[in-house]
Length: 55
Length: 292
Image 1: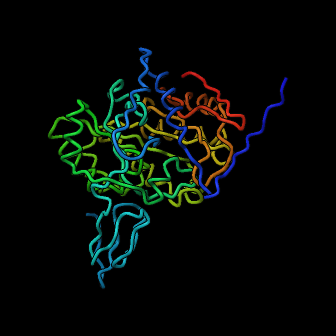
Image 2: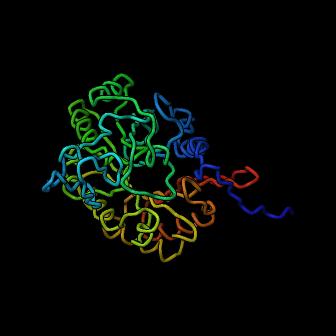
Image 3: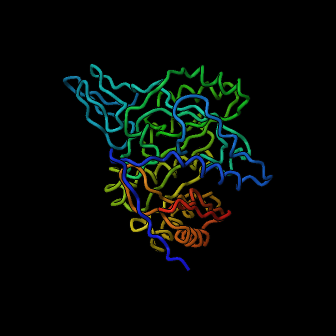
């Protein structure tokens, strides 16, 4: 059995952390919520401005 | 709106519990409300950072118009300074914006055949005038309006706004004042008060953030769950959000085990407890997922 890797977080040089991967996760979550199994996560449609926002 | 004038053109912003005392030229703690010649203006009025069509469950709202999509819109700024903010690019910094009028927002929703407008991404409370103007027009057009808010607003402005709001998700980040003071530069009491007021005026769902080593004890969960049951009702939907590193906080992401433990404790007091942001990512880029 492989030893479990310890979580190590690398801080970017500007001291902040990107959250660009957030939307990918939430889309999976939404897909699970909808009972009809429709892939509604893919319906997050960006119209204008900044992408990948939480909420 | 929502200010008290003083001599020498100073003014106090009475919108949120910070009560920022602003001399001419000063900005409030939110970074977007400025004293210009003795009058406080929201300089982010009509300034939009993002416009998207999102499922309403992403807000998260699971018990209001579920299965439908929202026209989601956000601006810049926030009156909390959470070290773990997931949207710090727009809430804690200047971000690129484009202009929209309330009429244009309504027209966009109608054009896209969407029944709900969601003010989200950054804090809608500090976008107050624009949210209010748009919400009034939305009501005239037969649209629903929802907020995703931190609840850090004074009672009077909140009650005025809620006349035009159909549903709210309020983020209760912790039960403890020390948590709010240390990590968000705010206090918890106004948030709890806002939740009670909103619950009397519209549909309310609650988001609770779980951060290990900051807010992860059984008693922490039990106290908050009991408060929600006693003050908002046993049927109030609660979304347990797992923390993950962002902005200035580098704690390890909240584990799935902790979220499950929290859900078990919340579920003893409340009927509808959900997970949110539950996946975990480690150094080796692998992810684990559990189903609701």
